[in-house]
Image 1 (cartoon, rainbow, N blue to C red):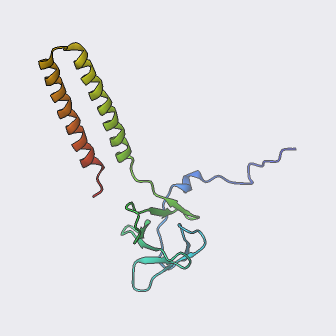
Image 2 (tube, rainbow, N blue to C red):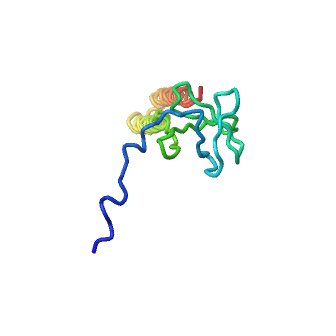
Length: 150
């Protein structure tokens, strides 16, 4: 006798990633503490939690809520899938940029060491060192510009 039934737990994987419109008149569970309830704050477009006192603003498209007034520099954004809040993952541009810059740094260092081995004279070594320093400075400036928060 099999214990699993195909009709017991219908899987709805497609609905887990689909954002449902947020209705301000409804009461939702808190995405932070999971114990309180989010209720609309009077005369605002924001929800307040009854337990943890967090405040969440509704985005203009009414598909996401954003946590407000936190000391954490990256605000968390959630969307409602009809059953629970799902943390909205931002694009991985910063992670990809950091990986690309790290690989570029490794290539620059490898080129620098190759230059040291190929050009043993001090004049050529100095020119390779200056080029390597210029390349590393350019990579550092690019990293600062790409990875800073707007």
